[in-house]
Length: 177
Image (cartoon, rainbow, N blue to C red; front, top):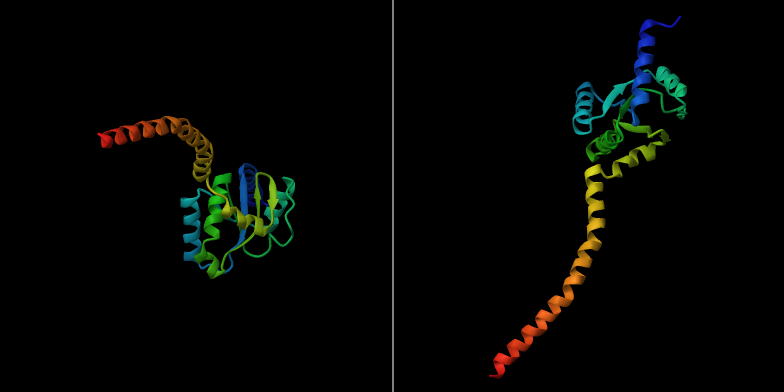
């Protein structure tokens, strides 16, 4: 008969994994406790994702039950799962790939999942290169407003050219007298 604590952890992990739009699995072996807390706080404050240490066998079982097939080496050693919305997961990836944290080499991205698809370590780390929603909106606005701005300047160009021609005739007429 399963342990009551294990059942509670299984239910909690099942809820966490099923509600998460994205997850990043990281190895955090080299972190001291203050560094661990600083990383947890940075991820929670800047991205809104949650940093959670998991029991490897339990996490593997829950993920398998949900239909995810992670490589066997992902859930070995000290592993934490960073989970949240898609935007929060991308934000967490940006934090995990900051030069200061990468240089220390204490945290390694092992794998990830985004919207139901399993990502390898390099793909999960590449999430950091994805722009956030505000940047994407600004880019879309630029793409949409660019042609409209060009069209407005083209429509205004003949009138402006005509005004310059008339002004040139007026100027030459004044100089002739």
